[in-house]
Length: 407
Image (cartoon, rainbow, N blue to C red; front, top):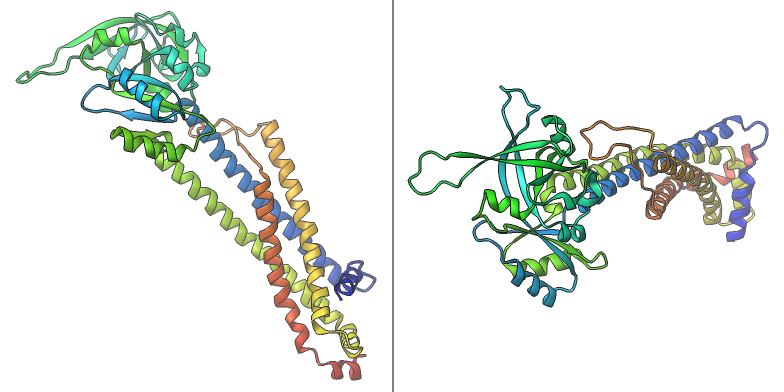
């Protein structure tokens, strides 16, 4: 009976003369499902591209996790030994010391106020193994973080009007002691040893990297306050982070914790857009209901004859469902193929530029087989429900009446 249902479904596909309305409705149904599938898959790929691109950028700039100590300095040697013994997933660590300073340059106007920035001391050799900051250097390298040389962000360099090799003046304040009402401001001359560009505004505008020797001259009592940790890509990051927090008993944050609103917004936007377009696809699939109603009304004489010959109602209903599913399957495949091609073009030729407020410069798109499979299954499920709702009309057909007056 299944082969008979397929035969009947195929016999309805090549529309003959006098079936202009049905043919037009079938084309409209095909086009609406193809466009709906295309939009659903492409927008999901674009949102997936945004999420992937931003995740990669944040993961490259920030360590896998960062340990924070707000009271006592971190003893780096015992920490490194303990992590090496108990956590083989930790591939490298990088110590940091941070403080806020003010920066001014000779290119600034006399009445212009100094720029406030975060001074961050690092070990260039450890940083090479922990983050990708070295790959973000556009002038100089991390090796230029030595003695009185610092590296600054591109946006900060532009605001100060300096380039590599130019002098800078660092203004800093001592930590006030008990009973001290005024805090003297000191200054230290330094040189721009390099310029980096991460694409993250808070880094490119507000961060200065220096050596520990230079930092200790300004803040001799500060010590190491942060430690960046790099994890093995093959390790289960979430499990390792939980174990590290329990073992260290210190605040340990991943890059997702630092940008939690951004991560949550990306996930919410991705699913919201998916469900909105899924509703549009649902509306497009309603054309199948109208098409099958027209088909059943047009073929009711054939249905009555087949029923009178002893063919089961379920077999006839199955043939109409296969008809609707065939149109939806082909339309969905066309739409998904077009979405795949469009996302490939956006990946290979990123010609749609985005404003500076985004973390990426061009519109990204990351199509995956999971997106294709999910969209296809959802569209086919919606079509199956629409077809099932339509073929229930066959039950109401009065065989004797049709054979007597229409047969």
